[in-house]
Image (cartoon, rainbow over all chains, first blue to last red; front, side, top):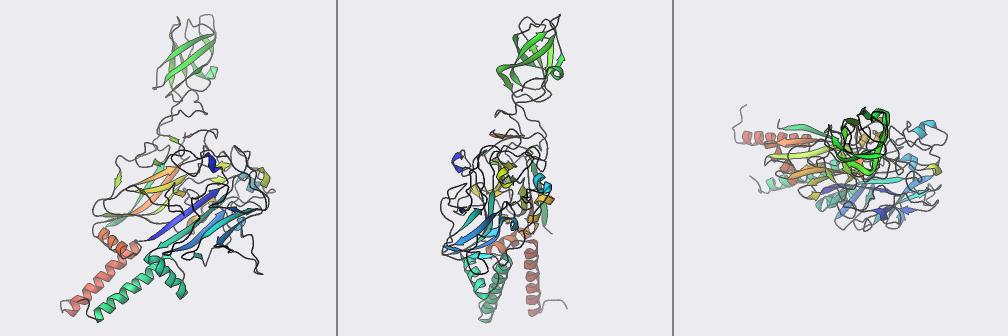
Amino acid sequence: MSVSYQTWEWSNIDESQTSGPSQKIPINGRTITLVANQPYDMFVGTVGNQTSIPPSTRATQFIVLEDIGVTPTNGSSLQVVVNTTSYFEDPDGAVSQGIPAKAIPYPCGAAPFDTGSAASNNGSAISIPSFKLNPPLYILPGQTWTMQYFTSQGILGGGDNGGGSVGGMVYYMQYDGADALIANNLMEMGVPVNLDNLDWYKQQALANNLQSLTQTGGVN
Amino acid sequence: MAMRSQIYAWDLYGEGTAPAGPVSLLDNLSSIVTPGTLYTAFTNYSTQAVTGSGSGLGISVISVGGGGEVTALGVTSFAYGNGYKVGDIVRLIGGGSGNDCTIQIQELQDDSDEWTGPSVMDLGVATSIFTGGKGNNIKNKAKTKEMQFIVVENFGCTPTVFFPGRLNGATWPTSNYRDRKIKNALGGPRAYIQFIVNTTGYFKDSDGVPRNGLPGNVAPYPLTTQFSVCLERKQPPVYILPTQTWDMTITCFNDFLADGGRNQLHCEQIGQLQAFFKYTLYDGVDSIIALRLVESAISVTPENVDMFKRNLYERNITMSSNEGQANE
């Protein structure tokens, strides 16, 4: 089946320290300062682990972003950019800074940061996603996309525990080949693109094909 | 029904063997088991293992009593030895002594990268949880038989929390945050899991390159109150086709158990680094149906296999009826 699930986890840990057989993530890495009010690309930016090329869908691919998350610090947010367009907007249509981090905590259950809360500081508090990304976010064939992390308060870098780390995550499904075509068809039909509907479409197609073959004498 | 659920759980300390390594500074009172005789102060002695298999430890006797019994000692510089475990007993020998002073190892060097054993893992190195020689392992490589088909449905490993630092007002107790130490601004191993089918990594990054795999934060194990919100999220099924060899690796990047600067993880109790997966084994006829479902690009689930069987029976009954062979 040409559907693959993929994830990408980014953090502000110095990629230049990477060594050894496992590339892109350093051992005991040093965190890097994130300047306030500046977007940081999670895939091909200047900070943290990066991919070799920007994420994009080929002509025979279709991507569905299922889930996203980021460390729930005060004043930070996550924005999805498709081609050159930021996805999340304010009600007046102006581009926003994205989804606030506290609405999409990562890892799931991370303590929300609240200076006045003992429960937040000792980790006994938990935060859960404020919503489900439904409908999910589609990346159509031929589109490039990325994600941007933004903090209004900044994150201080440094070695050991002198600095702070934040992490962001995206979890998506990549439909390839014939499955991408079906995904496109489902979208055109206004049917949500997910595995169940993909299976349903195929079963319908197989059944129709069988019926057609039977009626035309194609099968005994 | 020839399909059944199977589970495999791995723990870096699952084999139950304490790590071995170089010896740390000794505490005089608790270390000296037998003070011995005829020892000389300010003299370096070599050692001989009484229990355990360590070697190379040198001991400096600092003070002795009237009969040459040892009253204070320390580890000789650059002679910390290797292969020792906490609790091992060694004898101080040579230098005209009675060779009868024994001491017990109380602590290993926390800041060493020379620890060994099944509960010690190198950071940044993908380690098989089946046959990697770390934690509890299986004897042989995992391989499906000709009439078997495996779908791994649930999996996970120890998650990690991010510590955003004081600038964001986080005043976490870095020595005990959610029962963990915060090291390098991370509370956990920063672990990734990857399935290897034959020689190919299953999870790929967005540029198509299979690297470390899935982060433990996306697939946490165990699921606790603090890491349970992911329950609703679907996990990608991993298909292992007939006659394929397969493996699951874990790669860690943060030394959260020692001093934060080591290139090894030193695991000293169960539950510090874990991985888990649950799979369904389709056997015999069910494995053939599973393959047919894969060929039709339909998800292999127990429900779909059952659906396939039902359709088969229905069609068979219909054909039998049409041919007048069905019993009314």
